[in-house]
Image (tube, rainbow, N blue to C red; front, side):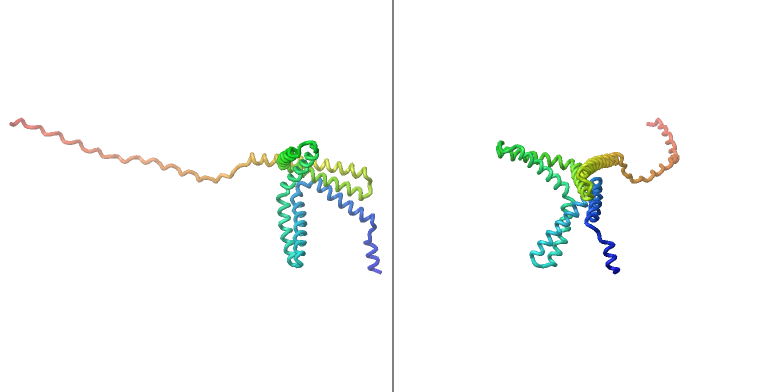
Length: 237
């Protein structure tokens, strides 16, 4: 009877489970929308570790050896976390440039020469990549705010508050998160620049110069006695 009562106390209906999941999704979305730029590198490192570990484990299982699979899983997780954590800026800028170049290629249409379309798309790819890499922090803020807004909208749908509330609140969270993250990055960059300009360098203290020695009076020099007068020569021949 005791076990049955405990199980009944902790039994949740489907609606209650959806409410709990919706609340958790909303919390994650808000954190991602407003703090996503700070958490981006760590989040990508975790994703890279999961992907690398999974690939390493699957490759090890092809060899029918679970010890090898476990070792390869750990190695893959380590390599994946490093790659996703440190090359995320390059990857994100490249993905952005590829999307823009692909859209430009499609927009130019088949009426244009194929070679000209490829050349123009390649030029657009390089230009957008340079711009995206320069403004990578703003792009990260945009992506994380967008994902956060989407999660908040999904959470509101799980709470059963309707499509209009999900779109409205999710859109507001996206806009507010993007603006706050962008302004925070610019202020942080401005503070770093100000600290760099006003930084003072530590100078090793120099020892105090020794006092100059007191001048010593020269010793008196005895004057030599005058030479004796020459003897007068006699006038003898």
